[in-house]
Image (cartoon, rainbow, N blue to C red; front, side):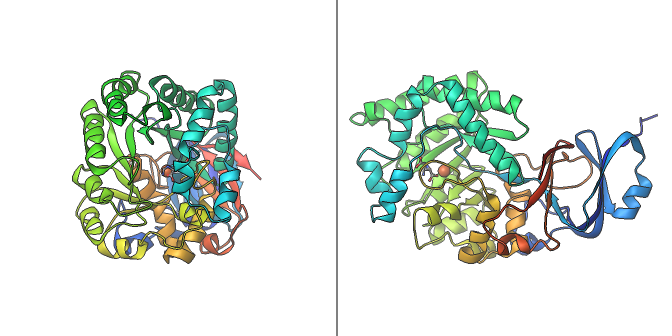
Length: 422
Ligand code: NIG
Ligand code: FE
């Protein structure tokens, strides 16, 4: 006889329980479907969801284990723990001076070409101890968690040598064991061409393909390979070569595509059947069509446009209407977008990209789970999914974009345990 599971945690009196049960990923109109239960309840057994429904019924049906914790949500909103599908969290030096230079009129690319930008972060990371990097990264993970995020994708890309890329990926791996947040690791050795290869980029590409990617795969340190496909960084042909090598080595693909200019990155990502194409501020009409016809998700990062002081945001409405899978992310990094707050991103998505609250919530739960390849385990509050849950201090989910710039995550539960209680 199967052993009956008992609830170890019960959350009752949830004003709006957003389960996200339904289509995965959410496309077009289905993005507005939250699987919402009024006056809901959730029973958790260990690290998994046991039952979800109307509060009284869940309470009546789920047998409680001895010592079961009970949380009275007092009419608040509950969502799946948010998922941030694009972050660069491992760095020590921050770049507020560059932010101020941009405020005074310099562009991101001008600063990068004069030796700042990613290459400045690389010089710093290479000479910073693992201990300090771990400490700084852990602070960021704490902030993500405090803002209701329970899983992030985490990229390397500030090492740009075999040794320093592995150093970053090992930090991600170690923190994954130590910290409540889950990280999905991505190798981003093609984030830039490092200083020492500026006159021989072919040699660096050779190193990427023949040494770095094999080392990352050998040590099982990444699930994805990403690349900064952009004019003056890696062009379309180089991006194709590098990413094909990564795919052959066993990594799934992500792209920084059409972020600062339209180069055909979206089309390339779709043609290689990448898991996601990210940024897409300058995606072409053809790029949107290619994404819509593919299984590649579009991860949109309005915090980057905001923090770069840009006027043009990714054409989210057009993409949703055409049937592209849309997710949202912070792009948390020291250069173009320094924030661990997905709620702020949701406000920007509303105001600048005209995404309503329900669409944005789909974009940071089911669709974000899809963008990191975890859609069978997280992003929904349904039976047998991981018990990653955020309780928000609000009575209507539409407060999320509207009440901006403050942290309304009241409690965060990761794998069935309360990890934030404010
Ligand atoms: O997503 N575009 C490339 N990578 C980051 C910026 C990284 C940095 O400036 O340090 C981005 O915008
Ligand atoms: Fe990025």
